[in-house]
Amino acid sequence: WALVRSGEADIAAFLDLASRYGGEEDYAVLDELVGRLAIIEYRLVLDPELDRFRAFVRDLLQPQLDKLGWDAPPDEKGDERLRRAAVVRAVAVIGRSAEATQALQPRLARVLDGDKTAIEPNLHEAAMTVCARSGDARFFERVLGAYQNEKDPAYKRRYLQALTAFEAADPAAKARELAMSATVPLQDFAGYVGGLLASPVSRDPFWRTLIEQWPKVEEKTSGAPFIFRRVVEAFAYLKERRHLDEARRHLEAHPHEAIKQATAQTLERLAQDVAMRERVAPRVAEWLSAARGR
Image (cartoon, rainbow, N blue to C red; front, side, top):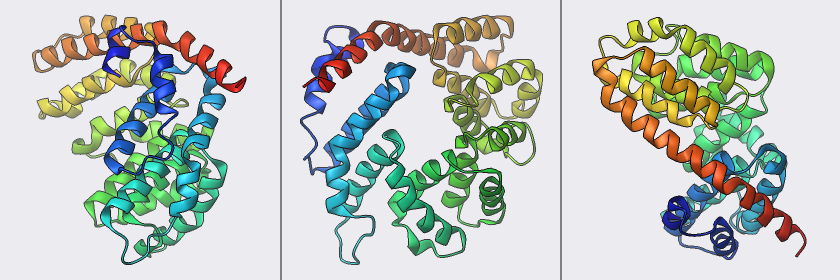
């Protein structure tokens, strides 16, 4: 993967290697694999190829999910639970499996009704993302209510972050409206901004809002330089060269001592990711076409 990022290896070689790991049972190896597949899906696959790449991910790891099942037996070892979590992230989150969504929805509904044993804890975050993506306005209000009433900090943060994942027009717009409100506390503001910039539905409209309302961002984070820096670091979720150019112009026009280092590092990282996307995405498309013909 390091060689692919540096331009010294062809992404096709990496994808050939990844395609041989469908039976891998070491959860640490699977976690690495799924992490790289997530980056490829997010950054390196052009929109017309997304369905094909997601099908590749599903085909690669669905057999493991079938074997593991959704529910962990009481005596199941921790390694198996972590393996299931990695496989679910691949099939449900990256692969966007409709069947996985259907399996998770009733389990998550029970969790929201108060039964936290309805989903194996390692799957809760993935379940929130998957169900939010396909959720309607009514489900948005349910998740918002769960966030407001939850006492467990980990669950509370997941509910808040899940609001940024909604892709239906009305709840996605509501999620963007909440960003500058008191509903999103200061300590979670940068993560919420990152979630919206990572969303294919909210990215561009929220990016425009973020730039237009930058004085509000500075005001909100004025007493917390660390949070302000993390907001700038969230710009790394942007994807295209136009975003890079806009981010550079914006940050150059709004210099601030608190974000000086974060600005330089984020623009450098984003420039590298954009260059990689432009260099590698056509080769991913070629590999997917060749794989389909095999």
